[in-house]
Image (cartoon, rainbow, N blue to C red):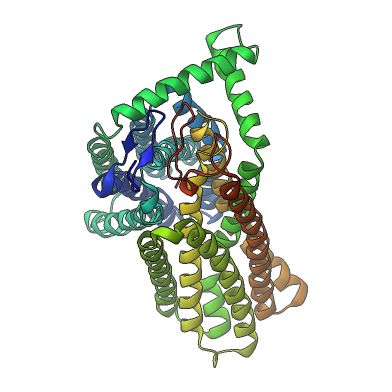
Length: 486
């Protein structure tokens, strides 16, 4: 087998190549395009044009995160079905339907607020379900068909193209919404949703290889046997339910899956908690204007992208040290993020004389490095353990991330308010939050170190169906598909 391929049970090499990676990146961009309409544009309309409390869009956005706790079920469904493409297309259809429903509900609130709120709740639940189904299946499809030499690069592509989806949609939709009206809002949302759906259909057209379909067929048979052994025989629905519970229990009982879920939750909790406190901190403590704090946030985003690109280039070029490099960047990125957050806490005490912009840029670099390295490492871990459980593992980790993002902003802002009330000091309030975020990154580092030790042990012990992650061996022949995860 060539060094750039992914091994199948028959010794065949599967690699979708750079074109395939960018095609799947288009799916992520399509997800980002719809999500930015529902979480940003509609957020502003609800608060400004409709003069509703900020809590309303806050709760709706949190709902779309929390419903993604169902990601393991979506992943299991794609495991049993044997193919990821139907879940990608179906999830995108549900996501688009939810976005259009959310825009209609916003227009409806002008005259019938209670009915509009009920429709908005249902619509945001659909948005979360669509993101969970489409995103989970897309990531598993990429993981099972990307060569190990491209793991970090593939992770970077998905993140960058999602951001590109945010930016392009924000610019174009912003122009299309002028002059603003509720009818135009619904029309623009419908156009974005339809375009995203068509882009997704084209992007995934025939991208699943014959070898993947064949491997998935064996996964389907294995899953059906598991369901039968689990005693699910009353009906088809009962069998599916019992099979999922059994599969999720198996995945949770795998030490590396459980620890990685913990790592994802803790690290992403710290990562997402920064979003809602950085700009208010810059304004309240350093006296930055709204425009200046927005540029500061943009500087951090630039640092994040640069950090991602640096890790992607280094880990893609260094073929002989790739696995070790990913582990090192994951641990180093977490440690650096913790140090920069502690630096921000000190910066608040020093005041305006502190070089805030370089500090925030450095935090972005650290965040980007850790994020891409962590995702690249997860790509290799998704195939470790019981076969035909790749989607379930991906779903578990995706659910952990979604829960973390749903809780991060709420926890951070609530802590700021609580500490401001207790101490009477804005500076100390933000400082405590930054210190707590740093502690979370330290805990994430401990998870990463433990996972790294397990990977090293598995590499020394040699290959097998459960010996180690796919990126640690040249080939993995175990009667099923070898899988990777973003």
